[in-house]
Image 1 (tube, rainbow, N blue to C red):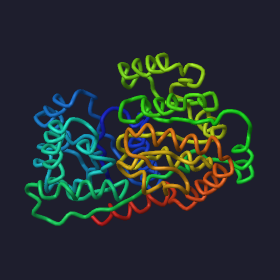
Image 2: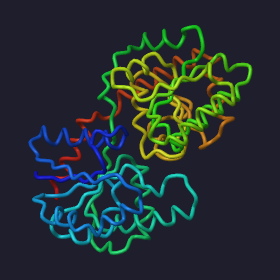
Image 3: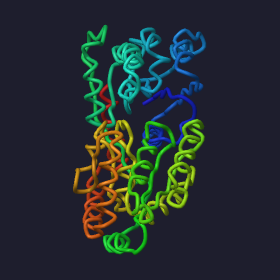
Image 4: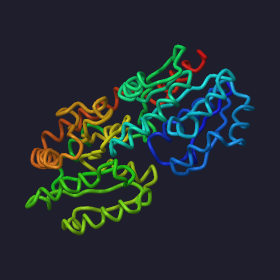
Length: 363
């Protein structure tokens, strides 16, 4: 197959969505398919809307020698009108990680984003979803879709975590959980508001006289949102958490694996996740995961078994779960072992990519 893939920026961008796209491209190329990356420059949302009228982009896509064109749904503002020009030239397949309008923000903003996204979604021929939750979010927009006069095929193909090659055994997980000292929490994700680091820090501060029994390693870019990162530093200083929290910044794959291996609990209380590869990555190292009920984390985490699910922003409940695992190390052992079982039962990248390739061949 001759395929195109439309993305913003570099395929090597550090995020779950870009990892998914990258693993898919690598698999397709190994299978003998040609994949051309069409990279659009990062700009603000309003300027992305003007891409629909870019003569150079229109010409490049209209003249592309593709059997089909993949589009990361993140690019929807650049394509919501342009796709009408491409209909009939080749099938248009959207890879949807999560809808922009699913994120927590003022309602009036999401009304606008829903209008743009619904128009984009109406002009593609097929969907690849990273979760049932994402599939449901797109289907919820169906009443708003205009021009949907033909059947649209879709596939749910889950992300995986076998790219990190964990080596911990069940005995390692038992021994780690029972080590003396503070409960070692790890937060992994770009330091941006949606990932909820401020909620985690507030929960640790809520522990009062027990906070010395908890440490937090923060792994992720501190430059993705510099204003928010500054606010996080102020929060750490204001709440007296300097002895509890270390900001590690972005780490390479080997360093990240080492951090997972030494940690005891993964906490990423995002306001929304279309899937949440990081929870599965942590489970590969036997880490119970604490996430929120908003988005697809519930497709990975079984509350009370291999982790906990809280309402977004619920500091008090989060603090309670941290305190539970801090005091009950036997429960930490059991939850860690169940987390490892959950990881092992999950499809691999190769299995998911194979299902995607078979799906694409139907077009």
